Length: 203
Image (cartoon, rainbow, N blue to C red):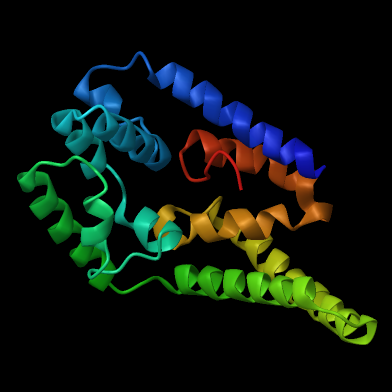
């Protein structure tokens, strides 16, 4: 089951990438996901094409850097320096990032962020565990927190669908991956999220 969801994410991402490779008009370019835009900005930067690199970099939702790169107003400069961007683009994106970063996060975003920290923390402890007694306690703690996380995520999806980037989609993808018993229910939902650019191609 684990491999089914990974293969699905890769297949969906490949389909999107192929379909968007022939897109040229500005209106159609809006169909690129945040992951496509990041990869294209990086690719064009490597080709020293600052115009196209800047175009796609500006399309990257700041929540991508906040969630995936743990970026702050202090570190976004370092991130931008890895791309071949025009000065105008750097100024525009810096302003855009700081505005989004300083905005109040939604309660849903904060909840999913907290859940992911709990998810990763208990699994890290289990990986470092050296005695069976402690490991059993940690596994029980993992089952308890996982159950609460899965229930929250499923209830949210029932009411609102897969969360947006602003509501923590980059956190929920890992939580969903660990919900082994919910794969049959989650697979079509994750597939739709991939097409919408809310889930990256691999986890």
